[in-house]
Length: 110
Image (cartoon, rainbow, N blue to C red; front, side, top):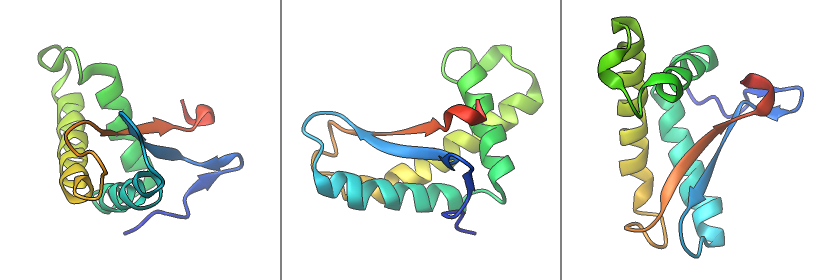
């Protein structure tokens, strides 16, 4: 399921940007939307995306061994979804070895 139309009254639930040196228009207009499409395909609903992303933000990057099993499961789902999206979209980046995708929640979803 592609959740492209999911939004809040202020816009999209989250955005994907390309971070790194000399980001091109193609990076923004081709690679980032491709990443987003593949990422969203890994989840059943917007709530599912938000649960997993929040779990990763709250416990995944720094201390995966110190979080409850349920949160670890959500973190693993996020990491796997990100990996699949990254692999699929990285080939479209102008500098794939120096650039990364960053997902940001809308400010009213935090």
